[in-house]
Image (cartoon, rainbow, N blue to C red; front, side, top):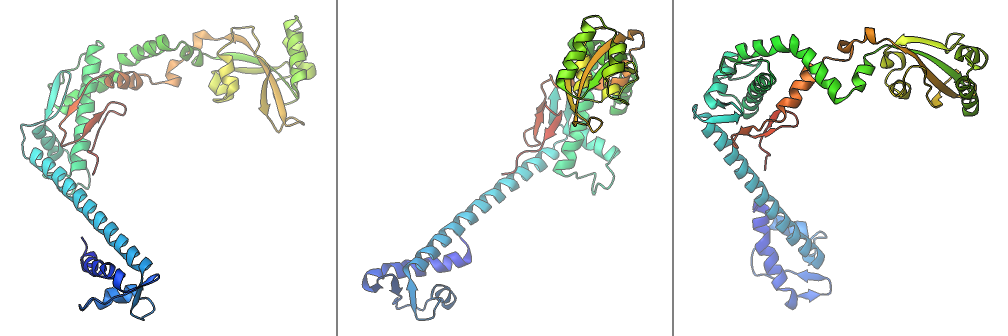
Amino acid sequence: MSRRAARLAPLLLVALLTFACADDGNVVTIHTGLEPDAEIIAELDTDGDGVVSREAAQAAATEAERQEQLDAERAERDAARAAQEAAYQSLLADAAAVAASFPGGQILIGDVRANIVESPVTLMDDPENPTHEEFVSRLTSMIQLRLAGVALDELGFPVDISLSDAEINAQVQAHLEGPFEEFAQQRAIEDDPSIERLATPHCVSALAVTSEADAVAASERVQSGEPLGDVAAVVNLPGLTEADGTIGCGQPFDLFGGGELALALLELEPGELTAPLLLPSAASPTGELWVVLRVDSLRTDAADLSSIGPFAGRELTESMSTYEVNVAPALGAWNAGNLRVSLPILP
């Protein structure tokens, strides 16, 4: 309880007990026979007539109880945080204690402390005595490196995680910059065949007109056998395509950015047309541009997966996220979603 609440509570209790003998409607005259705290009386007796309203007395009692509860909750939080810090410091003093374990290995408290001392972070105040945040940050890096080694090894790219961090890292980087990238590309294509289409140059022509009705009519003419170039030469808005409707060749996102037109191309085989697509456009007098795309050809010989990669990091992190990691509770908890150790939640 705060000092003010401690002073106020007895006074209010006496005042409320005298209501029956000194009650005048909504006010209470304090006749206690005691020497009340002048500061508190002054706060309650706002007009200086020696009479305190019932509402003021009750409000003061409620405020005293609220303050007492807040003080108790604050003390409880402070005690819990002190216990949390004490548990961390106790664990930190035991070099042989396990900081984290994972499939195929474990990391000791002493391993992390030695790593920090050998390679301290810039501006770290005291590498010999890292803060909780500094220790957990380094532990996270060490876990990530070893999980990368375990994942690569299981995928057929040998890594010896019993070596030093520098040596583990050299092995991992050699795989990521070498054959593992090609392996990851193939895995990505197996999971999503559209990736290969995204990497393939598309040669595209278009009908580009001002209304949906015109787009439908132009598309039907092409589907009925008229050359698209002839139809485009008559109906297309000027400046948006070549005279014969040609746009050019390129990967879908290079041609149209990340919008609807690029995605629409992925659904087409050479010679097929999209449905009419609506785009806002200042080039159209109506503000609406209706476009029908046609894939003229696919240049599969020029497909370049590296232009939408790399894939190695993505494949590796997905594998790493499947492993179970156990972290000493005093340090925090492993979050597989972002491959990090999260600090314990503060009370």
